[in-house]
Length: 177
Image (cartoon, rainbow, N blue to C red; front, side):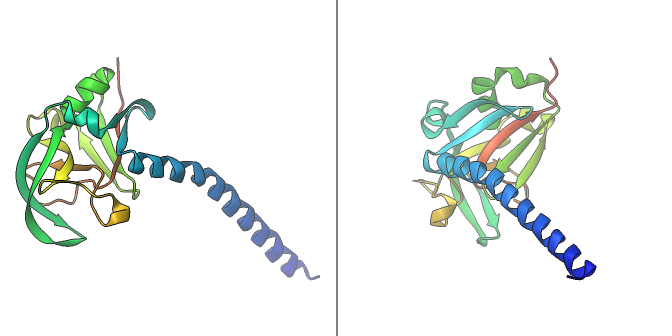
């Protein structure tokens, strides 16, 4: 066997081993994501550590609000929709009281999308919502062609690029205390 062939086999073996290791590490994440979607839940984290798991019934207990906005997404043409949800600041107050020193927040979706939010944005009244209903119906999950089970919406924003479909977690980052 030539030295160049041996080097190629070693590199291919290393790549195969790395692929297997990454697949094993990711399998836990995909199981968690599947469970969150099926159970209609998302996580509240403080600097990456899970502080609470919030479900649909929890949001219903927080006096959700209904509002109309324009939904502009890669899935379809822009259209007026009526959404129902709870302000993110209220969710954090109820499920992560230790979040108040956060420098910023990161909302992540089951599809791998991340939307960063400033502390000022989150604290602003009637601004950022975690929604669970669209046009009077509970949001369908991604697997059924929907935007849910939860979608983070920045109310009044002209464009929806920073909205986050399929919310998996809200992480309060840089908490001092």
